[in-house]
Length: 492
Image (cartoon, rainbow, N blue to C red; front, side):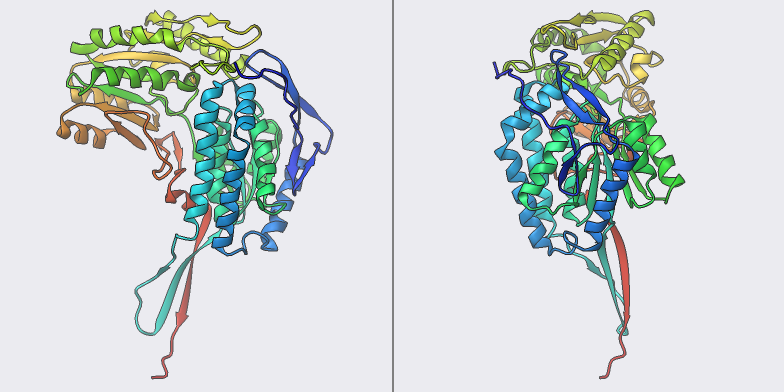
């Protein structure tokens, strides 16, 4: 068992390199879903705090204390920033677990390591991304260059606080921008710590600011701010639509959104390894308590193997029973807060009332008194019209459907407002390529589901968002492309 004593947290904002209270002095309780304890009071940022953070970011950008550094110099600082995360890995992992409920072993092995790797990777990449020279006639030289966009507003969700922040702050900072980060009010603590570690690594004051607070009070002012050049958001599709509206209502700032998902996972009868398919289907939906936008929450299994598949799946469910997230043996922890727990239970109730067959879970759990826990849940006999087949639940709930025809299952898989990720399991290479091409999703996994890397883009089609995180493509979000056309009057 990890030490469960109460650590000390600083909930104040980080603006222009300093820890500061909200301008009006307001705070809110940061409550742990592990056991309901109050971790600390967090600054309740508002318009005045966002204004101060944006002003600090603008001043830093205009005097070029960061944007004017040579890329190789920014690279060295970014690498030190990544090293700072690893040097404080245990502290960050414990903070993440207490703040949002994920098992501490995953907070340490996945979240901290992935965030540090992301920051390091973009630091390493920034002096290896070349600009272009266009093919012109002899009387001209046309340069195509990338410049930082300016002040970047970033709003991230509560499910992977460090990773989601890193995916956005790393390319934005590496490109030379200033950043104002608004973490979720449900899990703000690691974002505040990241800003301190960035300062310790040598990122100048004013370049990376963090203002905690609620969406309407801090997030909206950031998205509407006339001196923010770009807004990047990860969260619900409902709020993402509002972000685009606010970007247009204000200064037509660039708006990039990574939104919801209802990802289909299709298992054909000729699946090359049924055990692996079962483990991936179960493990991926229950990982992080199902609080993942890319979770394969719609499972399509070919009718001839469905019974065998579900028999194997049900044998795995007991190992995902929720436990104390601070116990290093726990693989499924707490739902982030009571509101989200109530929402998950509402969807489970809808599944039952609309006629789906509950074959596992479906009830609250209480491994730790005062915490927010729900059993891993599987529904069989789901139809496309049911709510649990259409709406994003963001909890450990798997909806199983059967099929007999490849064309039919592709149509069913694509019958969604979302298009984030998908999975295909088959030993037939033609079927694998054909189905993967037909699926309207930003990522299609073949004969695996959870394999991933910083080198590939992440994002979706349709209402799953606009733009891509990760890979070199992310630089496109945080840079402007400039053409400089030079006339050459040759003297020879």
